Amino acid sequence: MKRLNEWIVGVAVLAVIMVITWGMFAVGDNMRPGTTPFSQDVYALHNTVLGVVTVIGVLVFTAMFTSIVLHSKKRHPNAAKFTHSTKAEIIWTAIPVLILVVMAVPATRVLIEMEDTGNAEMNVKVTGYQWLWKYDYLEDDISIYSALDRDSNRARQIGSDIKPAEVENYLLEVNNRLVLPVDTKIRFLLTADDVIHSWWVPDLGWKRDAIPGMVNEAWTLIEEEGIYRGQCAELCGKDHGFMPIVVEAISKEAYAAWVAEQKGTSTVQNANVTP
Image 1: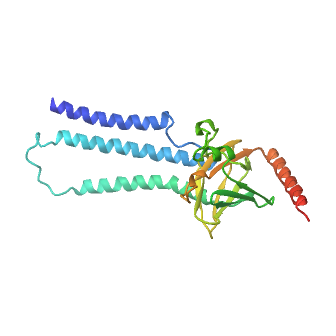
Image 2 (image 1 turned 90 degrees about the vertical axis):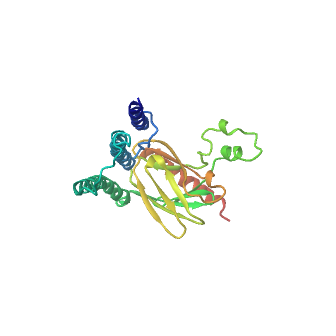
Image 3 (image 1 turned 180 degrees about the vertical axis):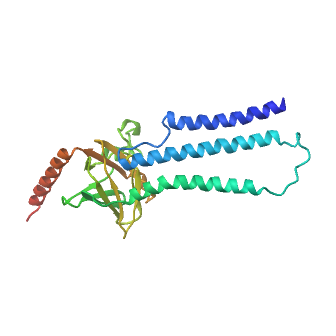
């Protein structure tokens, strides 16, 4: 009876591991595939590595519980007397090294791809401030500031009568979105004016620190039109949680019209302040 209970415990543990793994893939509690070629490569690499380590975990736990059951003190009161097995040591050293090498190949390819910011069609400078973002479209000579939108800012105040649950995209909406064209390789130049921030939009598949006095590079190529939300991912002060990022990806034609509109607005504003 005791032996049966030991087997039941072992099988139950393995079943839990398999159910959790299945849930991550099937139910959706997993990384999002994103909307860029790079984010999808990261997603595929993550699933591959997760599958490998899951199989390893199942095999290791199976061997462990099998050993517990078959080599218990009750079954073998006298311990075996041996020092080591050279063959076993070679096997358990060679197999992990081989697995690491196999996983390192696709991982290295993805890392190299992540750093390849060459041949960009446009450049956007991102500057972090306490507590908002500034975006400079270098080719088009457009600059915009992006801060938490008014509704979210009001709802977050102590004593506010506004319920956060009633605010759409609470803490994830801004007054000025970062508008970008689809099917365009865009290089980001990230820095900060005060403390360290981190620019992170999960659907793009990466995040980059924005550090004062330094410029970090990243790139993206958005394939689908839509709105993609992110946040500052580096603790940067008391309002760190109120620095959302909203990327609005639109067609190239719509982007060209937006650029023309922004330049026209800027010209009018400049004319109004001319003495």
